[in-house]
Structures are given as structure tokens and as C-alpha cells.
Length: 279
Ligand SMILES: CC/C=C\C/C=C/CCC/C=C/CC(=O)SCCNC(=O)CCNC(=O)[C@H](O)C(C)(C)COP(=O)(O)OP(=O)(O)OC[C@H]1O[C@@H](n2cnc3c(N)ncnc32)[C@H](O)[C@@H]1OP(=O)(O)O
Image 1 (cartoon, rainbow, N blue to C red):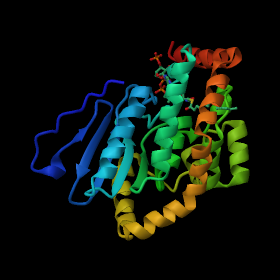
Image 2 (cartoon, rainbow, N blue to C red; image 1 turned 30 degrees about the vertical axis):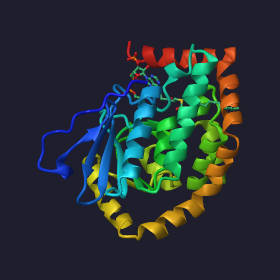
Image 3 (cartoon, helix red, strand yellow; image 1 turned 180 degrees about the vertical axis):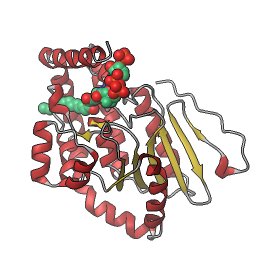
């Protein structure tokens, strides 16, 4: 994927400078050590190969810069945090493309789930499937209180199956029984329901999502990094290791599953339904 980096905006010093790429805006505040990362892949922040690649690069840049200890993930697109994986990357392409795409999905999850940074999701829009997965890799989730902002792993509604590491991430967050129901039924939760089941940590008025994320971040930043990072590692490493041990097999599984005629038909029909919704 071709990555175009954005120019820093004119400002009064480092903390006023923006950086990032075409699809991932980064607003760093060096003084507090916190950066706000905004997805900008209109209309719905679908996780195309380009967005995944730019996300990984931006995250790596922040991880390698000791100035930054915390990142807030949010959306620059109105009403949608992320529509999840880009269905056009999984439809009508060849096996080599599917393998490349899935490797990038795995890579992003691996980096996010064990990131040394404090990650907070400021969920300011709809958050289905892969969008929900990204938020689940964060240390804390704040969702805007809007009945249109549904969140959950809805894969079964598309006739596809959430891979084991999506499932593990959900189980680690809301427990086994709630995950069993949520995954099989492809549940998309309203904000109040998401809060009740523990899928998000706070639901706040829409105009307070970012300010709440910044104040929650201050609390997490007060903890010594090494102790917090080792604790996070202790909680999450087993889950990560499961995928690391079988990364290639997982890619093969995905490629053969997604290449099936029946799955391709389901995805095409789902995409058509999304497009018809407008007309
Ligand atoms: C045995 C198992 C082995 C291996 C594993 C194999 C399995 C595979 C597992 C794969 C996992 C997948 C996880 C996913 O993330 S799949 C994606 C699921 N996403 C969704 O269901 C969300 C779909 N989108 C929506 O519900 C709405 O778009 C949304 C609520 C986000 C926003 O609604 P709004 O009304 O604002 O916009 P729309 O008019 O619906 O959409 C605008 C245009 O965007 C297109 N669109 C929407 N979502 C996607 C998407 N995910 N990918 C690509 N394109 C998308 C939509 O079609 C519209 O397009 P146009 O009509 O403008 O062309």
C-alpha cells in the first residue's frame, strides 16, 4: 500500500504538531505524553489494507518515541468509529490477496493487544465486528451515548465466523457465557447494554467522549509504566501466544474459509444489502 504522510500543521512547538498518514491522523501532546489517533477512511473507516498498514506504522512510531505513554483511539468520520474489516478486501479477490490482508489484520491485533502504551478507545460512532475488536484491545473503552452507536462482534450475521483470537479477546473482556451468546447471535449492543455486559467501561454524552478519555488517561498515566506493562503482559500474553504459535495455519484457515463459494455469496449479499439500504 502507498503511504502518504500528512504535513505537520504550523504550530507553536511539538505539542501543537500533527503527524500521521493520509488515513490515520495523530495529534500528539508531548507535554502530557498522550497522542490522539483518529481514523480517517471515509465514509465508514472500514479497515482496508491501506488503513491497517498506516495504523500499524503510526502505532509503531508512537511506541518507539519515549515521549508517548498513552494513545486515545477515535474516529474522524462522523457517526462511525469503524465498520470493521473491509468487505471489499474479502470479496472477489485471489488467495494471495486474502493471505496478505489477513496477515495485516493479525499484525495489528498482535501489536495493539500487547502494546506497552496505555490505549483508550473513545468510541464516537458505530462499532461493529473488526471495529469492536480494535476497541477490545484497548485498556479502557468509552462509548458515546447514542442509540445508533451499536457495538459487538456481529460476524455470524454475515454468515462468517469470528476467529478464535477475536473470541478470546471478547471472552477476556465479558466472560465465557456472555461471549457465547454474543458471538452465536452476532449481538450488536446498545450503549446501555454494552455497559451492562462489560463490553465498554463508560457511556457518556457524545460531546464528552474525548474529554472523558483524557481524564481517564490521566489516571492510567499515574501508574508507573513498568509495573503496569508487566501486569498487562501477565494478563494478555497467553492469549497472544495462542495466535503467535499458529499464525500461518490461521492465515491458511482464513484463506480457505473466505474463498468458499458459499461464503463469497454471503458476503456479496451482505454488501448488496448495505448498498440497497440507501435507495
Ligand atoms: C472457521 C473460521 C476460520 C477462519 C476465520 C474466517 C473467517 C472470517 C472472519 C472475518 C472477520 C470479519 C470481521 C469484520 O469486521 S467483517 C465486517 C463487518 N462489518 C459490518 O457488519 C458493518 C457493516 N456496515 C454497517 O453496518 C454500516 O455501514 C455502519 C453502521 C457502519 C454505518 O452505517 P451508515 O448508514 O453510516 O453507512 P452505510 O450507508 O451503511 O455505508 C456507507 C458505505 O460504506 C460501505 N460499507 C459499510 N461497511 C463496510 C465494510 N465493513 N466494508 C466495506 N464497505 C463498507 C457501504 O456498502 C456503503 O457503500 P456505498 O453504498 O457508499 O458504496
